Image (cartoon, rainbow, N blue to C red):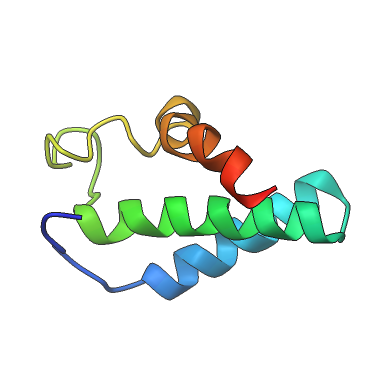
Length: 83
């Protein structure tokens, strides 16, 4: 990360990402927990890299990263590392 813009809510975002992933998979084994931790870290990193007050206010660096596709671009390449 080059620059932290605003760390407010990073922990909440991490917790939401973790619980959301676990809820979606409906599993609680070691492999799923590792994936959930990676997912939560990914979405929390978006939180600290830019402000989000609607699509016209997000920084260019963060634009589009909060989408499913944006999350997948960071999350998916690292799956082999944690499983």
